Image (cartoon, rainbow, N blue to C red):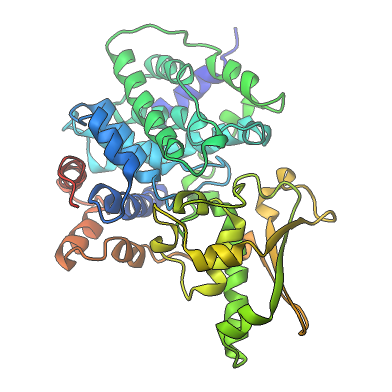
Amino acid sequence: MSETPTRRLATLIADARPDETAREKARAGVLDYLAVTLPVLLGRVADSGLACLRRVYDGQDARTRALLLGYAGHALDYDDFHPDFRGHPSTVILPALFALAADHPTVSAEGFLDAYAVGVEAAGRLGLAAGRRHYALGFHSTGTLGTLAATAGAARLVKADAGATAVMLGIAATQASGLRAQAGSAAKPLHAGLAAQAAVAACQLALAGFSGQPDGIIEDFLAASCGGQQDPGLLTDRWGEPWRIVAPGLEFKPYAACSGTHSAADAARRLRRQWLDSGHTLDALLDGLDHIEVAFPPGGDLAPSVRRPRNGMEARFSLEYVIAAGLLRDDLTLAEFAEGPVNAAISALAQRVSRCPDPLAPPDELDPSARFHQVTLFFHHDAPLRCKVTRRESLSHPVDLSHKLRRCLAGETDAMIDAIESLSRLDSPSSLSRLGGILLSALHQPRR
Protein backbone atom coordinates (compact mmCIF):
# COMPACT_ATOMS: atom_id res chain seq x y z
CA MET A 1 0.00 0.00 0.00
CA SER A 2 1.38 3.42 -0.95
CA GLU A 3 2.30 5.91 1.75
CA THR A 4 -0.37 8.55 2.41
CA PRO A 5 0.35 12.30 2.27
CA THR A 6 -0.01 12.52 6.05
CA ARG A 7 2.58 9.77 6.53
CA ARG A 8 4.95 11.30 3.98
CA LEU A 9 4.66 14.68 5.65
CA ALA A 10 5.34 13.17 9.07
CA THR A 11 8.45 11.43 7.75
CA LEU A 12 9.77 14.63 6.20
CA ILE A 13 9.20 16.54 9.43
CA ALA A 14 11.03 13.92 11.48
CA ASP A 15 13.95 13.68 9.06
CA ALA A 16 14.23 17.39 8.20
CA ARG A 17 17.65 19.00 8.21
CA PRO A 18 17.35 22.74 7.52
CA ASP A 19 20.51 24.42 6.26
CA GLU A 20 22.31 27.47 7.65
CA THR A 21 20.50 29.80 5.25
CA ALA A 22 17.18 28.65 6.70
CA ARG A 23 18.51 29.11 10.23
CA GLU A 24 19.61 32.66 9.48
CA LYS A 25 16.13 33.51 8.20
CA ALA A 26 14.72 31.91 11.34
CA ARG A 27 16.83 34.23 13.48
CA ALA A 28 15.20 37.22 11.79
CA GLY A 29 11.79 35.74 12.49
CA VAL A 30 12.61 35.33 16.17
CA LEU A 31 13.66 38.99 16.40
CA ASP A 32 10.46 40.18 14.73
CA TYR A 33 8.34 37.99 17.01
CA LEU A 34 10.01 39.49 20.07
CA ALA A 35 9.51 43.02 18.73
CA VAL A 36 5.75 42.62 18.41
CA THR A 37 5.13 40.39 21.44
CA LEU A 38 7.10 41.99 24.27
CA PRO A 39 5.34 45.39 24.19
CA VAL A 40 2.03 43.58 24.72
CA LEU A 41 3.34 41.35 27.52
CA LEU A 42 5.11 44.27 29.22
CA GLY A 43 2.06 46.51 29.04
CA ARG A 44 3.70 49.05 26.75
CA VAL A 45 0.59 48.76 24.58
CA ALA A 46 -2.82 48.45 26.21
CA ASP A 47 -4.58 45.17 25.47
CA SER A 48 -7.69 44.24 27.42
CA GLY A 49 -7.84 40.83 25.77
CA LEU A 50 -4.58 39.73 27.37
CA ALA A 51 -5.78 41.00 30.73
CA CYS A 52 -8.85 38.77 30.42
CA LEU A 53 -6.79 35.78 29.38
CA ARG A 54 -4.46 36.23 32.35
CA ARG A 55 -7.47 36.06 34.67
CA VAL A 56 -8.36 32.67 33.19
CA TYR A 57 -4.93 31.17 32.42
CA ASP A 58 -1.99 31.41 34.79
CA GLY A 59 0.66 30.42 32.25
CA GLN A 60 2.25 27.91 34.62
CA ASP A 61 2.15 25.00 32.18
CA ALA A 62 3.31 24.64 28.59
CA ARG A 63 -0.17 24.67 27.06
CA THR A 64 -1.29 27.92 28.67
CA ARG A 65 2.13 29.50 28.10
CA ALA A 66 1.69 28.74 24.41
CA LEU A 67 -1.79 30.23 24.39
CA LEU A 68 -0.72 33.48 26.06
CA LEU A 69 2.43 33.85 23.94
CA GLY A 70 0.46 33.15 20.78
CA TYR A 71 -2.21 35.68 21.62
CA ALA A 72 0.34 38.35 22.53
CA GLY A 73 2.30 37.78 19.33
CA HIS A 74 -0.75 38.41 17.16
CA ALA A 75 -2.49 41.02 19.33
CA LEU A 76 -1.15 44.02 17.38
CA ASP A 77 -1.42 42.40 13.93
CA TYR A 78 2.18 43.52 13.52
CA ASP A 79 3.61 40.01 13.21
CA ASP A 80 5.01 38.43 10.08
CA PHE A 81 3.05 36.99 7.17
CA HIS A 82 3.80 34.17 4.72
CA PRO A 83 2.24 34.36 1.24
CA ASP A 84 2.05 30.60 0.65
CA PHE A 85 0.43 30.11 4.05
CA ARG A 86 -1.78 33.21 3.67
CA GLY A 87 -1.43 33.71 7.37
CA HIS A 88 0.92 34.49 10.23
CA PRO A 89 3.23 31.53 10.89
CA SER A 90 5.59 32.77 13.59
CA THR A 91 2.91 33.70 16.11
CA VAL A 92 1.68 30.10 16.20
CA ILE A 93 4.98 28.24 15.77
CA LEU A 94 7.29 30.17 18.10
CA PRO A 95 4.90 30.26 21.09
CA ALA A 96 4.57 26.47 20.91
CA LEU A 97 8.35 26.08 20.66
CA PHE A 98 9.16 28.50 23.49
CA ALA A 99 6.50 26.89 25.69
CA LEU A 100 7.86 23.39 25.11
CA ALA A 101 11.51 24.41 25.31
CA ALA A 102 10.95 25.62 28.87
CA ASP A 103 10.09 22.02 29.80
CA HIS A 104 12.85 20.45 27.67
CA PRO A 105 16.14 21.97 28.85
CA THR A 106 18.17 19.74 26.54
CA VAL A 107 16.80 21.48 23.43
CA SER A 108 19.66 23.31 21.73
CA ALA A 109 19.50 26.71 20.08
CA GLU A 110 20.23 25.07 16.74
CA GLY A 111 17.50 22.51 17.32
CA PHE A 112 15.08 25.32 18.13
CA LEU A 113 15.90 27.17 14.89
CA ASP A 114 15.55 23.95 12.90
CA ALA A 115 12.15 23.26 14.45
CA TYR A 116 11.05 26.79 13.59
CA ALA A 117 12.19 26.41 9.97
CA VAL A 118 10.36 23.07 9.74
CA GLY A 119 7.21 24.67 11.13
CA VAL A 120 7.34 27.44 8.53
CA GLU A 121 7.96 24.85 5.81
CA ALA A 122 4.86 22.98 6.93
CA ALA A 123 2.88 26.23 7.06
CA GLY A 124 3.77 27.11 3.49
CA ARG A 125 3.08 23.59 2.28
CA LEU A 126 -0.28 23.49 4.02
CA GLY A 127 -1.23 26.80 2.42
CA LEU A 128 -0.29 25.55 -1.04
CA ALA A 129 -2.13 22.27 -0.50
CA ALA A 130 -5.24 24.06 0.77
CA GLY A 131 -5.42 26.37 -2.23
CA ARG A 132 -7.10 29.77 -2.28
CA ARG A 133 -10.60 28.65 -1.41
CA HIS A 134 -9.82 27.79 2.22
CA TYR A 135 -9.31 31.46 3.05
CA ALA A 136 -12.05 32.66 0.70
CA LEU A 137 -14.56 30.36 2.41
CA GLY A 138 -14.03 32.27 5.65
CA PHE A 139 -11.33 30.33 7.46
CA HIS A 140 -8.52 32.18 9.25
CA SER A 141 -5.49 30.21 8.09
CA THR A 142 -3.43 31.30 11.09
CA GLY A 143 -5.81 29.41 13.35
CA THR A 144 -6.68 26.47 11.11
CA LEU A 145 -3.59 25.57 9.12
CA GLY A 146 -1.47 27.19 11.82
CA THR A 147 -2.44 24.50 14.32
CA LEU A 148 -0.86 21.90 12.05
CA ALA A 149 2.18 24.04 11.26
CA ALA A 150 2.89 24.65 14.94
CA THR A 151 2.52 20.94 15.59
CA ALA A 152 5.06 20.17 12.88
CA GLY A 153 7.55 22.48 14.57
CA ALA A 154 6.78 21.04 18.00
CA ALA A 155 7.24 17.47 16.76
CA ARG A 156 10.62 18.38 15.30
CA LEU A 157 11.64 20.16 18.52
CA VAL A 158 11.04 17.09 20.70
CA LYS A 159 12.58 14.80 18.05
CA ALA A 160 9.45 12.71 17.61
CA ASP A 161 9.75 9.88 15.11
CA ALA A 162 7.58 9.71 12.02
CA GLY A 163 4.94 7.53 13.64
CA ALA A 164 4.48 9.80 16.64
CA THR A 165 4.55 12.87 14.40
CA ALA A 166 1.71 11.47 12.29
CA VAL A 167 -0.40 10.98 15.42
CA MET A 168 0.43 14.50 16.60
CA LEU A 169 -0.67 15.96 13.27
CA GLY A 170 -3.93 14.03 13.45
CA ILE A 171 -4.68 15.22 16.98
CA ALA A 172 -3.87 18.77 15.89
CA ALA A 173 -6.11 18.62 12.84
CA THR A 174 -9.09 17.60 14.91
CA GLN A 175 -8.63 20.76 17.04
CA ALA A 176 -7.93 23.25 14.24
CA SER A 177 -10.30 26.21 14.02
CA GLY A 178 -10.54 29.92 13.28
CA LEU A 179 -12.88 32.20 11.32
CA ARG A 180 -12.00 35.39 9.43
CA ALA A 181 -15.21 36.93 10.73
CA GLN A 182 -13.42 37.59 14.03
CA ALA A 183 -11.14 40.21 12.42
CA GLY A 184 -11.07 43.41 14.44
CA SER A 185 -11.73 41.67 17.75
CA ALA A 186 -9.60 40.01 20.42
CA ALA A 187 -10.83 36.64 19.18
CA LYS A 188 -8.63 36.93 16.08
CA PRO A 189 -5.32 36.88 18.00
CA LEU A 190 -6.88 34.27 20.25
CA HIS A 191 -6.88 32.01 17.18
CA ALA A 192 -3.07 32.12 17.25
CA GLY A 193 -2.98 31.32 20.94
CA LEU A 194 -5.41 28.44 20.59
CA ALA A 195 -3.41 27.06 17.65
CA ALA A 196 -0.18 27.12 19.65
CA GLN A 197 -1.93 25.58 22.64
CA ALA A 198 -3.43 22.82 20.50
CA ALA A 199 -0.01 22.07 19.02
CA VAL A 200 1.53 21.67 22.46
CA ALA A 201 -1.38 19.49 23.58
CA ALA A 202 -1.10 17.29 20.48
CA CYS A 203 2.61 16.87 21.09
CA GLN A 204 2.24 16.06 24.77
CA LEU A 205 -0.65 13.66 24.24
CA ALA A 206 1.16 11.66 21.58
CA LEU A 207 4.33 11.47 23.69
CA ALA A 208 2.21 10.20 26.59
CA GLY A 209 0.91 7.37 24.41
CA PHE A 210 -2.47 8.81 23.48
CA SER A 211 -3.72 7.21 20.28
CA GLY A 212 -5.14 8.78 17.16
CA GLN A 213 -5.47 7.87 13.52
CA PRO A 214 -2.04 8.20 11.88
CA ASP A 215 -3.29 8.16 8.28
CA GLY A 216 -5.58 10.27 6.15
CA ILE A 217 -6.42 12.95 8.71
CA ILE A 218 -4.81 15.91 6.96
CA GLU A 219 -6.28 14.80 3.65
CA ASP A 220 -9.75 14.68 5.21
CA PHE A 221 -9.19 18.03 6.91
CA LEU A 222 -8.30 19.64 3.58
CA ALA A 223 -11.22 17.97 1.82
CA ALA A 224 -13.62 19.34 4.43
CA SER A 225 -12.35 22.92 4.36
CA CYS A 226 -11.02 23.79 0.90
CA GLY A 227 -14.03 23.77 -1.40
CA GLY A 228 -12.63 21.02 -3.62
CA GLN A 229 -9.48 22.94 -4.56
CA GLN A 230 -7.10 21.09 -2.24
CA ASP A 231 -4.02 19.27 -3.58
CA PRO A 232 -2.48 17.09 -0.83
CA GLY A 233 0.48 16.28 -3.07
CA LEU A 234 1.76 19.82 -2.51
CA LEU A 235 2.28 19.00 1.16
CA THR A 236 5.47 17.16 0.33
CA ASP A 237 6.43 17.82 -3.30
CA ARG A 238 10.02 19.21 -3.41
CA TRP A 239 10.05 19.65 0.35
CA GLY A 240 12.73 22.10 1.42
CA GLU A 241 13.67 23.00 -2.17
CA PRO A 242 14.01 25.79 -1.22
CA TRP A 243 12.93 26.06 2.39
CA ARG A 244 9.74 28.13 2.66
CA ILE A 245 11.38 30.31 5.30
CA VAL A 246 13.94 31.29 2.63
CA ALA A 247 11.69 31.63 -0.42
CA PRO A 248 9.19 33.15 -0.63
CA GLY A 249 10.15 33.78 2.99
CA LEU A 250 8.65 35.61 5.92
CA GLU A 251 7.22 39.06 5.22
CA PHE A 252 7.87 41.48 8.06
CA LYS A 253 5.34 44.26 8.54
CA PRO A 254 6.20 47.96 8.46
CA TYR A 255 2.76 48.86 9.84
CA ALA A 256 0.64 47.43 12.66
CA ALA A 257 -2.28 46.77 10.33
CA CYS A 258 -3.57 44.01 8.08
CA SER A 259 -1.03 43.28 5.33
CA GLY A 260 -3.86 43.68 2.84
CA THR A 261 -3.77 47.43 3.54
CA HIS A 262 -0.04 48.06 3.21
CA SER A 263 0.23 49.00 -0.45
CA ALA A 264 -2.76 51.31 0.06
CA ALA A 265 -0.94 52.92 2.99
CA ASP A 266 2.18 53.34 0.86
CA ALA A 267 0.15 54.96 -1.93
CA ALA A 268 -1.50 57.37 0.51
CA ARG A 269 1.82 58.31 2.07
CA ARG A 270 3.33 58.99 -1.36
CA LEU A 271 0.41 61.27 -2.21
CA ARG A 272 0.92 63.10 1.08
CA ARG A 273 4.60 63.67 0.30
CA GLN A 274 3.78 64.77 -3.26
CA TRP A 275 1.23 67.28 -1.95
CA LEU A 276 3.51 68.71 0.73
CA ASP A 277 6.57 68.78 -1.53
CA SER A 278 4.62 70.96 -3.96
CA GLY A 279 4.30 73.63 -1.27
CA HIS A 280 0.75 72.89 -0.12
CA THR A 281 -0.45 72.33 3.44
CA LEU A 282 -2.53 69.52 4.88
CA ASP A 283 -5.25 72.03 5.73
CA ALA A 284 -5.41 72.97 2.04
CA LEU A 285 -5.67 69.29 1.15
CA LEU A 286 -8.61 68.75 3.47
CA ASP A 287 -10.35 71.95 2.38
CA GLY A 288 -10.03 71.23 -1.34
CA LEU A 289 -10.68 67.49 -1.22
CA ASP A 290 -14.01 66.20 -2.49
CA HIS A 291 -13.58 62.44 -2.10
CA ILE A 292 -11.09 59.57 -2.33
CA GLU A 293 -11.30 56.35 -4.31
CA VAL A 294 -9.22 53.23 -3.84
CA ALA A 295 -9.04 50.65 -6.64
CA PHE A 296 -7.79 47.07 -6.29
CA PRO A 297 -8.37 43.64 -7.88
CA PRO A 298 -11.85 42.20 -7.28
CA GLY A 299 -11.86 40.37 -3.96
CA GLY A 300 -8.70 42.12 -2.83
CA ASP A 301 -10.43 43.48 0.25
CA LEU A 302 -11.42 40.20 1.88
CA ALA A 303 -9.00 40.69 4.75
CA PRO A 304 -9.36 44.47 5.28
CA SER A 305 -13.13 44.14 5.42
CA VAL A 306 -14.01 46.79 8.02
CA ARG A 307 -15.39 49.94 6.39
CA ARG A 308 -16.35 52.02 9.42
CA PRO A 309 -14.08 51.04 12.31
CA ARG A 310 -15.24 51.87 15.81
CA ASN A 311 -11.93 51.27 17.57
CA GLY A 312 -8.24 50.84 16.87
CA MET A 313 -8.47 47.07 16.58
CA GLU A 314 -11.08 47.35 13.83
CA ALA A 315 -9.06 50.15 12.21
CA ARG A 316 -6.25 47.68 11.49
CA PHE A 317 -8.60 45.97 9.05
CA SER A 318 -9.99 49.08 7.37
CA LEU A 319 -8.70 50.25 4.00
CA GLU A 320 -10.50 53.54 4.52
CA TYR A 321 -8.90 54.26 7.88
CA VAL A 322 -5.40 53.20 6.82
CA ILE A 323 -5.55 55.43 3.72
CA ALA A 324 -6.77 58.38 5.80
CA ALA A 325 -4.03 57.79 8.36
CA GLY A 326 -1.43 57.65 5.60
CA LEU A 327 -2.58 61.02 4.29
CA LEU A 328 -2.67 62.71 7.68
CA ARG A 329 0.34 61.20 9.42
CA ASP A 330 4.03 61.38 8.55
CA ASP A 331 4.36 57.81 9.81
CA LEU A 332 1.97 55.06 10.82
CA THR A 333 2.81 54.03 14.36
CA LEU A 334 1.23 51.75 16.93
CA ALA A 335 -0.67 54.76 18.26
CA GLU A 336 -2.80 54.96 15.10
CA PHE A 337 -4.13 51.45 15.74
CA ALA A 338 -4.13 51.28 19.53
CA GLU A 339 -6.99 49.79 21.48
CA GLY A 340 -9.63 52.39 22.22
CA PRO A 341 -11.65 54.87 20.16
CA VAL A 342 -10.46 55.74 16.67
CA ASN A 343 -8.83 59.10 16.02
CA ALA A 344 -11.59 61.57 15.17
CA ALA A 345 -9.70 63.39 12.41
CA ILE A 346 -8.59 60.19 10.72
CA SER A 347 -12.08 58.72 11.02
CA ALA A 348 -13.66 61.82 9.47
CA LEU A 349 -11.34 61.64 6.47
CA ALA A 350 -11.86 57.88 6.17
CA GLN A 351 -15.56 58.50 5.56
CA ARG A 352 -14.64 60.19 2.28
CA VAL A 353 -12.96 57.02 0.96
CA SER A 354 -14.86 54.74 -1.44
CA ARG A 355 -13.84 51.25 -2.54
CA CYS A 356 -13.80 50.74 -6.31
CA PRO A 357 -12.72 47.22 -7.34
CA ASP A 358 -11.06 47.32 -10.76
CA PRO A 359 -13.16 45.13 -13.13
CA LEU A 360 -10.25 44.89 -15.58
CA ALA A 361 -7.87 43.35 -13.04
CA PRO A 362 -7.76 39.56 -12.53
CA PRO A 363 -9.57 38.46 -9.36
CA ASP A 364 -7.33 38.62 -6.31
CA GLU A 365 -8.02 34.97 -5.52
CA LEU A 366 -6.16 33.91 -8.67
CA ASP A 367 -2.90 35.59 -7.66
CA PRO A 368 -2.75 37.60 -4.41
CA SER A 369 0.89 38.42 -5.14
CA ALA A 370 -0.31 40.64 -8.04
CA ARG A 371 -2.46 42.78 -5.75
CA PHE A 372 -2.24 46.56 -6.01
CA HIS A 373 -3.95 49.62 -4.61
CA GLN A 374 -4.52 52.80 -6.58
CA VAL A 375 -5.52 55.74 -4.41
CA THR A 376 -7.05 58.73 -6.21
CA LEU A 377 -7.71 62.10 -4.59
CA PHE A 378 -10.54 64.06 -6.23
CA PHE A 379 -10.70 67.80 -5.56
CA HIS A 380 -13.46 70.37 -5.89
CA HIS A 381 -11.48 72.49 -8.33
CA ASP A 382 -8.08 70.90 -9.03
CA ALA A 383 -7.11 67.90 -11.15
CA PRO A 384 -7.12 64.49 -9.41
CA LEU A 385 -3.94 63.05 -7.90
CA ARG A 386 -3.31 59.33 -8.29
CA CYS A 387 -0.79 56.86 -6.97
CA LYS A 388 -0.68 53.13 -7.63
CA VAL A 389 1.47 50.82 -5.52
CA THR A 390 1.72 47.07 -6.03
CA ARG A 391 2.19 44.52 -3.31
CA ARG A 392 5.57 43.65 -4.79
CA GLU A 393 6.65 47.30 -4.61
CA SER A 394 5.72 47.52 -0.94
CA LEU A 395 7.64 44.34 -0.19
CA SER A 396 10.72 45.59 -2.04
CA HIS A 397 11.55 47.84 0.91
CA PRO A 398 13.01 45.62 3.67
CA VAL A 399 11.93 46.28 7.24
CA ASP A 400 14.78 47.18 9.60
CA LEU A 401 14.03 44.74 12.41
CA SER A 402 16.48 46.33 14.83
CA HIS A 403 14.71 49.66 14.37
CA LYS A 404 11.32 47.97 14.70
CA LEU A 405 12.38 46.38 17.99
CA ARG A 406 13.49 49.74 19.38
CA ARG A 407 10.29 51.48 18.29
CA CYS A 408 8.12 48.77 19.79
CA LEU A 409 10.06 48.79 23.06
CA ALA A 410 10.43 52.55 23.37
CA GLY A 411 10.82 53.28 27.06
CA GLU A 412 12.84 50.16 27.82
CA THR A 413 16.54 50.56 28.57
CA ASP A 414 19.07 50.36 25.77
CA ALA A 415 20.80 47.57 27.69
CA MET A 416 17.64 45.46 27.72
CA ILE A 417 16.92 46.05 24.05
CA ASP A 418 20.52 45.26 23.10
CA ALA A 419 20.37 42.04 25.12
CA ILE A 420 17.12 40.95 23.44
CA GLU A 421 18.51 41.64 19.99
CA SER A 422 21.71 39.74 20.75
CA LEU A 423 19.93 36.76 22.29
CA SER A 424 17.50 36.54 19.36
CA ARG A 425 20.34 35.24 17.21
CA LEU A 426 20.43 32.06 19.31
CA ASP A 427 24.11 31.63 18.55
CA SER A 428 25.34 30.55 21.98
CA PRO A 429 24.51 27.51 24.16
CA SER A 430 22.76 29.61 26.81
CA SER A 431 20.91 31.99 24.50
CA LEU A 432 17.73 29.92 24.21
CA SER A 433 17.21 29.53 27.96
CA ARG A 434 18.01 33.20 28.58
CA LEU A 435 15.65 34.36 25.84
CA GLY A 436 12.94 32.04 27.09
CA GLY A 437 13.49 33.44 30.56
CA ILE A 438 12.87 36.99 29.32
CA LEU A 439 9.61 35.93 27.67
CA LEU A 440 8.37 33.97 30.69
CA SER A 441 9.29 36.82 33.03
CA ALA A 442 7.30 39.22 30.86
CA LEU A 443 4.45 36.73 30.75
CA HIS A 444 4.17 36.51 34.54
CA GLN A 445 5.23 39.99 35.62
CA PRO A 446 3.55 42.50 33.30
CA ARG A 447 4.38 46.16 33.68
CA ARG A 448 1.62 48.73 33.58
